Length: 82
Image (cartoon, rainbow, N blue to C red; front, top):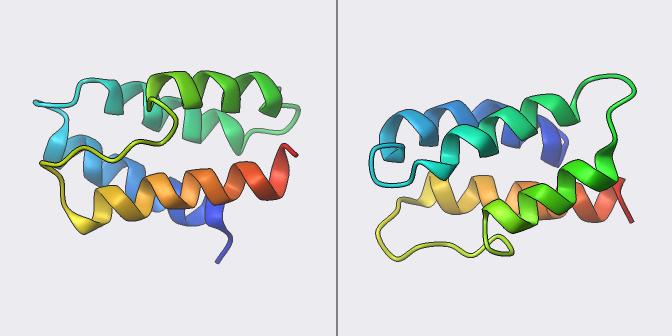
């Protein structure tokens, strides 16, 4: 499974579980879905993702799945955008 595929699988889960306290997760999910679309401007999307996630910073009040999602997104960026 690629890092992006893992993030695509996990993003809706962490949005559902943590979205009330972390409203940015809706945009994280949306960007993650857009990244998998053909012709996506991955450079711009990853730039926005870094902004929305404060550089993939993992908050103190979240679960391992949240952490795994952000790590997968960071890895996907390293694989795809750079």
